[in-house]
Structures are given as C-alpha cells and as structure tokens.
Image 1 (tube, rainbow, N blue to C red):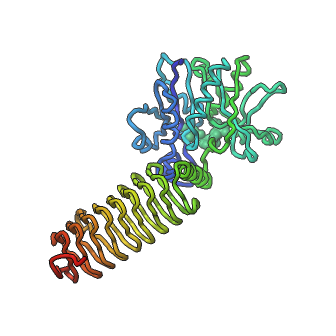
Image 2 (image 1 turned 60 degrees about the horizontal axis):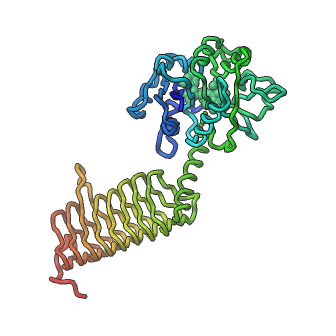
Image 3 (image 1 turned 90 degrees about the vertical axis):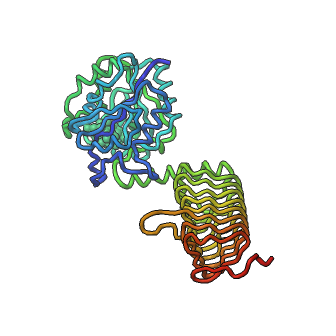
Length: 420
Ligand code: UD1
Ligand code: MG
C-alpha cells in the first residue's frame, strides 16, 4: 500500500454552534466530536495523523490522544489555510494525503477505506467523497461537466441559484496526491463573498490544469453529516445512539423501547438480557446474560451485573458488582459495593458510601437478605446468609456476621442464627 498521512481540520470557530466551546469539542454520546474522526482515520492506518487546531482553542489538544500530531492555524480563515498550517508536519515520504474535517463524527472506517481504494484505482490527483442529499443546504455543491466529470466544488455562499439546486454535495473527505495538493494550495485566492480560503477551490484549479479529479459517491448519506449547528449535533447523537442499540440487538439483547434507552458505546451486555424503558447505562458497565434491567434504572460507571441479575424500578448502581441471581427490585442505591450471589436487596435499600470526605466500600455476602429501607453505612460487611431487618441502619465497621440477623437503629443482632 502506498504511504499516506491524514490531516483532520479542527480549527474552525464553529460560530453556528453559538457556544464558547470549540465546535469539535462538543460531545456526541459523551465523546468529543473530533475523536470519532480521529478514530476513523486511525483505522485506515496512515503513516501520521495531523490535527489542525486553532491558536485560540488550545484545549482541543487535551482531548487528542498522544499518537496524533498537532498543527496550529493562527486565524481561522478557511479550510485551505488550515491545510497549509499542517504542511510542515506532512512526512516527506508520503505520496497521498487524506483530508477530513473534525465535524463529521458519523463517518465509518469502511467508507474511508472505500474512498482510499477508489483513489488508488482512479489514478486521479484528487478523489472527493460526495453524496446526494434531498436537502443539500449548507454544503458545497459538486460541479460536473456534461460528460459527468467533476470540474470543481462551489460553496453555497458563493453559488448561483442554479448551482444551489445541485443535490450532489461535498462531504469534506478527500484523498489528494501530496505534490499536487501542495501546488494547488498556492493558487487558492480569497473567496468573493466570504473572503475565506477554500480548500474546495483547489479542485477547480486542478481542473483548469487538466488534472484528473474523481468522485466516490457515498451511498449512506447519513454518515457524512457535517455538524455545524446544535440541531445537527442532536441528529449525530441520535444516529450514534441508534448504532449502539442496534449492535446490542444484533447480539441478542432485548431492548423494550429503543427511544428511551441510553447505552454508552463501551457497555457490554450479554445475550437474552432484557432492558426496559427509561434505562440509562453509562460507560464501563458490564451486564451478563439473562439479566433484567429497568424500567427507570441507572447503571453508572463500574456497575457489573453477573448472569441472571434483576435490577428494577428506580435503582442506581455505581462501581459495584452484583453476583449471579441477585435481585434489587425497587428504589435502591448501591455504590462501591460488592454483592454476592442470590442476594435480595429490599426496596429502598441505600448504601451510604460517602462520609462527606471519602468513599468507602461495602460487601454483602451470598444469599444475604437486606430488608426494605435498610441503610448500610460504609465501610461495612454483611456476611453470607445474614439478614438485615427492614428499616435498620447498619453503622460503619459494625459488620454483620454470617447467618446472623440484625435489626433496628443502629442495627443490633436479634438472634444468633438465621431461622430457616
Ligand atoms: C465544508 C466544505 C463544504 C462541505 C462541508 C461538509 C469548505 C470550504 N467547505 O463546509 O464544501 O460540503 O464542509 O461538511 O471546505 N476549519 C479549520 N479552519 C478554518 C475553517 C474551518 O480548521 O479556518 C475546520 C473546521 O473546524 C471544520 C472543518 O474545517 O472541522 C470544516 O469547516 P466548516 O466551517 O464546518 O465548513 P462547512 O461550512 O461545513
Ligand atoms: Mg462543517
């Protein structure tokens, strides 16, 4: 494979977002937009990834992983100028340059692979990824001559009425031959209306010089959405959420109402588990097989449900493991807790894991029975087969012995062994 590098433009002001946060840092499903583009670029295995950030937006650097190079654009005066800022970072050995924009978080690696393969075969100086949109508003339009050859891209602001009616648009993803790109950049002049230096103008220059431009048409226009305003951010979020839900459904998870279930992309869920409406599953959550989750359940970071666990209405679990077959049906909170197998957590049970200064852990042994409305103040251990009576408050360090029964406020042993 010929060597190539990728440049991701992320230095724009993002004025249309009406926010002080740099546009590419706006999160889509809890992850900054630009990181999706970096991940898709990385999957292509380029020799180097260069992200162009704005001088005024140094915080963008903080979310980028160490493996990427950063170039700084002094003033956001157009995409051609942004690429120019990255030129000194382009390795001299590469033949091609893939250019992507940091505001297209839905792009999939397969589409970029297709674009790159297309470029290699077409033997063009530039291959642009295009798509057809019913409503092309805001995008650059692809200009073709009567024989269908791409002759340039016209930005909406600069376009005539007739050109605006074109529905084939520029997705902002291209492969360029490096030498031609570098030459073309030198010929870009400020656009008539906006005064910006458009990368898209390099293509018209190629055409004038008789150099071949090719287009690769993306069938799935959804994945090339450019996020310029809040509404598009929401659309991107919906698409990414749906992708996660689809992945789980394909793997045999039953989702009772995809519209109200939020599942972070990092969550792992086993087959035949049923997730009920209004459930929110955050990052790094692991759920086993045949579990029942929700409705109205909040699984936070570090929640682990082993096979056959049942967590019901208004339950919240953070950084805790629930062993096989454990049940926690209603209105309960577990934080920093290790729960054994086949435990019953009664309605209203709360683990008090924070004393105002630090978090402490709680352990509940196999087959223990925690009565309704109990409070367990961490750090504390409830032994195997133990019973904590309804309404009890088990105070910190007052561990409950295996098989014992405690009740009251503060909880005291009632009798020596559990009466089976
Ligand atoms: C751009 C394309 C348009 C295409 C659309 C696809 C140009 C001139 N226009 O328009 O043809 O249909 O994307 O989504 O390329 N950026 C910089 N520095 C700048 C300006 C922009 O780094 O000076 C970055 C932005 O952060 C953004 C990307 O380049 O990630 C594209 O800029 P944006 O302003 O979003 O361009 P669009 O109007 O969407
Ligand atoms: Mg854009």
